[in-house]
Image (cartoon, rainbow, N blue to C red):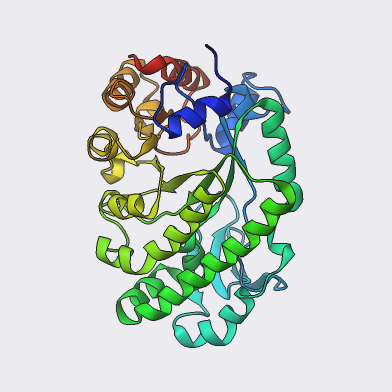
Length: 364
C-alpha cells in the first residue's frame, strides 16, 4: 500500500514498517543554482518537491534579545563587514561567500550583563518573535502536498551562543553554572510561551525539529554530566511539551555528540539527525545502542556523494543504512551534511532513488 509522506514519516518516527524510506535533501544554494543552470531544475521549481521530499518545516522564532536594535556597522572592507547585532555580539562576516562569522566580542560575558540587560528583554512576550505568516504558508503548502510538517527552530544551546559566544558560555558552565542554567530556562520559557500562541492560532505541526549543534570534530562541547545538569532540564521541558501536543522530536546536531545521546534520549528525543561521519559519528553503532528508542535521519558520508563514484556510494549506503532498515529501525534518508556543488545532479538523483527503496517494508 502506498503511503503519504505524513504516514511514512509517522511510521518511521514510531519505528514501524513503511512502504519506502522517506527522504530529505539539503543542497547548498550554489548547488541548486548549478543544477538550474544545467537545466535539471526549473527556474522557479521547489528543490524539495523536485526530489519528492517527505518532510517540510517552518516557523523559526526570533530569539534575538533586542528586537528593536539595528545592525551597527563598526568596520567594512571590500571582503568583510564587522557589525554589532541585537544580541550585543560583534561579528565579522564575509561579503563574498557564505561562512560562519568570526566571533569578535560579546556584550553578555557573565551574569552581570545577562541580568541587567538581556534577561529583562527575553522574559517579555512579543508577537514580533513569531513568524505567523511564514508558518501559516509553510504549513498550508505542506498540507497541499501531503508532506509531514515540522515546526523548525533552535533550542537553548543554539540560543545561548549567539548571545555570549561559545567561549563565555562554556566558561560559565564551569565557573558559574547557575547563571547558564538560568539562561537555559529563560530561553526555554521564551520558546514555550511563543510556541503556545503560535500553535493556538495557527494549529500544531506534525512534528518538532530542534537544531542544537552541541559537538565539534572529536567531542561534544560539554561532558555528559554537564549536559545533564545544565542543558537537559531545558530540553526535557521542550520535548515534553512537544509530546503533549502529539509531536515526535527530531534533534539536529552536527559534530561528535555520541556521548550526549543517552541524556538526549532521557530528555525525550525521538530521532537524531545528522550523524556527521567525519566527526566520528557512526549510524550502525548508534542503531545498535539506541535503535529500540530512536529513529535516525542522515548518517551517510557526504564525501562519498562528492566523489560522484556510485560504487563508493553503494558501499556507504549498504554499510550505514541496511543495518537499520533490515533491523526494524526507523530511518530517513539524508547525507550527514548539506550537499555542496561538487555533487553532480545525476549523483544526487541516484542517491535518492536508491535510498528510497532500501528498507521497503523493512526489507533490504
